[in-house]
Length: 282
Image (tube, rainbow, N blue to C red; front, side, top):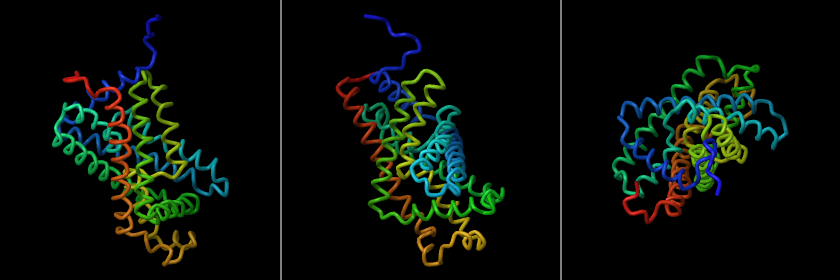
């Protein structure tokens, strides 16, 4: 039987081992380091969302190809998280593998999730603030601002069950992208592993809680400009759901869906396949 080459990808059992070990490292990381890396991730995902917003501006009626191109551009944020290094809440749902293997406590898992979730949120809000002062929303004769409203309005108009289901499907793909990155040995491999699952969830309109922490507030900011609202053609009644309340009504079911999609549908499934029954494991 031939020996594996040094550039061969890690096998699925090896990936499970790597994620379990990394989960311990993430859950025991000092709080300041975790928060700083979480702020970066919120900013990185915002960069991807900015890119997506520009690409989708005046895309016309070419629905499928435009969504594909938008999804590929949105992948920028996840590529930055993986390659540059940052702590992203949705990807950290894979820490459940270390928890299920009894390598970390429930308290350590919850601590990581809370620190990362809220630092991601702050990072996204900082990005929205910088975007506001940059004049980005006025680009293309304010067409970018109109696109920001369109994106945000589409998200807040989902019912709770729609938002939950789209969040579940989204993070199943995001965590599968992370899983494949842990199988990769090169930067190129990791980028290719990210692009297809991430562009897929974006093109299919699934919901990512951290991306929404940027996109919906950005739409709220755009909707505060009467000129942009006039260009959008929306009436006051049509913008009824584009409020802080509408944002919360989206973000809560999306977050829950993201957790189940990543922690249960990916992390626990692979734990049962590759790690359950190992006793003390590593």
